Length: 265
Image (cartoon, rainbow, N blue to C red; front, side):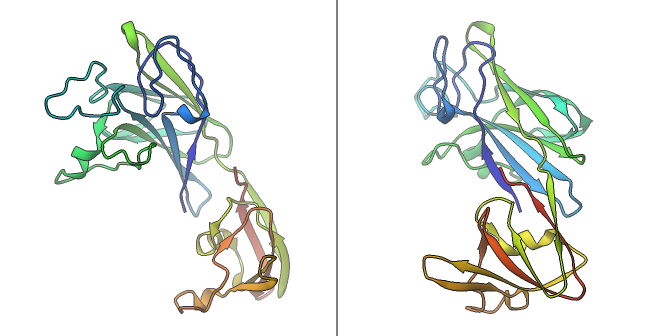
C-alpha cells in the first residue's frame, strides 16, 4: 500500500518559480502552492520507503517550452538538493540513478515527464501536482527508513539572482498501533489511513487468520462484510475499504493474534 501526501512548505530563501506556485522574489506561499510531494510505501516488516518528489514548471506553466517559445525561467535540467536534516533514513536512489546510502543528494537534475514517458527505458515518474499538466519537470529521491521516528528532509532549488529557495518536508515514519485479536470475534477501531483497501490493511495482521470483517453502514442501515476467502468472487464482499476511526467486528480462525495498524495522518 502506498500513500501520497502533500505538505505545506517553508520558504527559507528567496525566489524560484515552482509547480503550482509561481513563487518569485517577494511573493508569499500558501498550502496550495506546495511543489513537494511525498510517496510513502510501507513494507510488511514495518519499515518503509519514502520518496520525496520536487515538481517544477516555469512561469508560463511549462517544463519544456513549446516549439518557437523561449523560457525566461528554465526549470528543465535544474539541480535540486535533498538533505536529510533529522531522523533515521538514508537515500538509496534518486531520479538520476542509484545512490549507495547517503544522507544527502546534491544536484539531482529535473527531467521532463513527457520526454521520459516516450523514452525506451523510462525512469520512475509521478503524477503532476496540477490537474491537466501533460509535461512537468521532476526530481526525486527515495529514502529507506527502518526505525520509527521523525524524518525531516530539506529540498533546495535555484532561485532568482543566484540565490536558492528551500522547502521543509516532515515525512516521519508512521507509528504502529498494536491491536490484540482475541478468540473468534474482536471489536476493533481502524487507526490507519481513511478509505484504506482492506486487502492491504490486513497485511498488518500477525499470528491470526482473519476469516471475516463486518462494518455497520449508517447510510443504508445495514452490515457490510468482507471475506478474505471470497476476495476474488464478484459480489461476495460489500465492505471494500476501512474508514479511519470506525469500528469493525473481526473474526479469526484460531486462538487469536494481533493487528499492527498504522497511525494515519
